[in-house]
Length: 83
Image 1 (cartoon, rainbow, N blue to C red):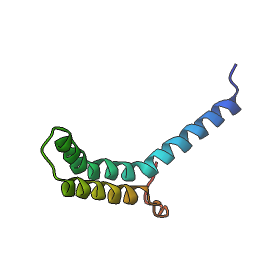
Image 2 (cartoon, helix red, strand yellow; image 1 turned 90 degrees about the vertical axis):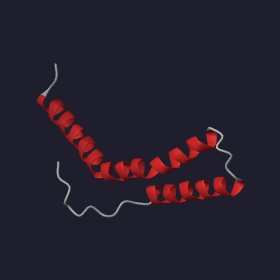
Image 3 (cartoon, helix red, strand yellow; image 1 turned 120 degrees about the horizontal axis):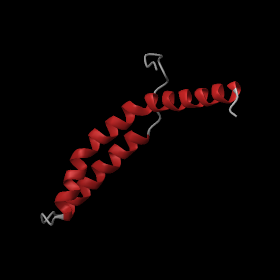
């Protein structure tokens, strides 16, 4: 039998998980949106669009720059996000 304390603990854990997801959702969305041009560029390279070494290097440099931005720490919570 589940006790009231266990239910309360479960609800607290669920709230913490939802809160964490809400806090990182903008960063995840930005990462997905910003990756679209790079995914398209990689698809073009894979399809054999005869890219030059310079074009490949440029695409990789843009991907690395975006990855660095995506992996940078989030700004402090300003309290504007609510659950």
